[in-house]
Each structure stands twice: as C-alpha cells, then as structure tokens.
Image 1 (cartoon, rainbow, N blue to C red):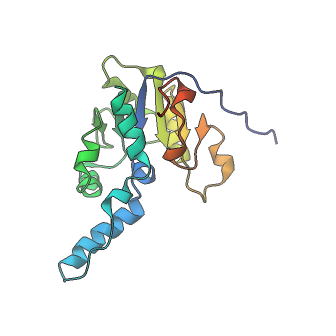
Image 2: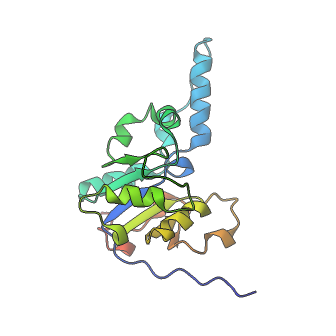
Length: 189
C-alpha cells in the first residue's frame, strides 16, 4: 500500500477559523465544571479554574487581535450546547468576529462536508475563501476544511492514530506550538 502524500507546505493566509470542541475548550473539564456547579447547589466546593478551560488559545487570540487579523469560530454545536459550553467564557468568545453554529441555515451537511467552513468564510468581508487557515482537532474537520479549499492546522488528541493526521497542513501538539510566521502572519514578539 502506498504511503499517503504529505500535505503541501504552508501558504500565506489572511483569516483564521477555529473549531471549538476539544480544540479551544477542554470540553471534558468543562463538563466537570458544569457538574460541579450543580454540586454547588448542594453546598459542595467549586475547585476548578475556568481560565484553564481555554486550551492554550488565549495567547494566540490576543496576538491575532493585536495585529488586526480576523478570526471566527465554526462549531458543529447547536445553540443550547454552545451556550452551556461557553456561558462562563463570554468575554473570550466575544473576541471572535463571528460565530457559525451547526444549526446555521447555510450548514446543510455536517463535517466532513465543507458547509460550516464555507459559511463561516463567507461572513468575513470580503470573503477570503482560499486564504483561510482552519484549526481543527478531528479528521472529519480536516477533511471538511480541505474540501472548502482551506489549509488546516491540526491539534489532534494524543490517542489519535498518526495516520489520521497526514492530510493536515501542519500538526501541532497544542495551540501554543503554532508558529504564525509559517503562514505569513506576524510572529510572536
């Protein structure tokens, strides 16, 4: 069996699109926070640091804002799920230029179809279709971004088979490892 072809080298981008799931939010610990909040009603202690739920994204988001680089969120979550997952992080998510949820009328099909990323890119003004970099953590999301004609920075779960990461433009251990200059963006100071 032939080895998979490596992804082409990174090209300059002007806009970024983030998936949310296990990429921006540590959803497992977020669910634990929600569980703990329920426990609080019964006088149990709350011991989680909400800031730590934003997984290494804060540095990158602040950097993008500082340099005026547009970025948006495209998540398969519906409104109720999104509200629950982000209720304690409203300020962080208000930094995104726009947010496209899975129930958006333009999102007819879920990943690996490109609908969600195409809908998200169209809302930038002007739409930068081929100049978008998508941050994803799952192979279906990588497929969707590539089908939309976009590059992908993948931050896979450590347990994911490495064969499932070969199509991504770059593979990172965490968002903290992202090197903006690889995609023609200003480097961190």
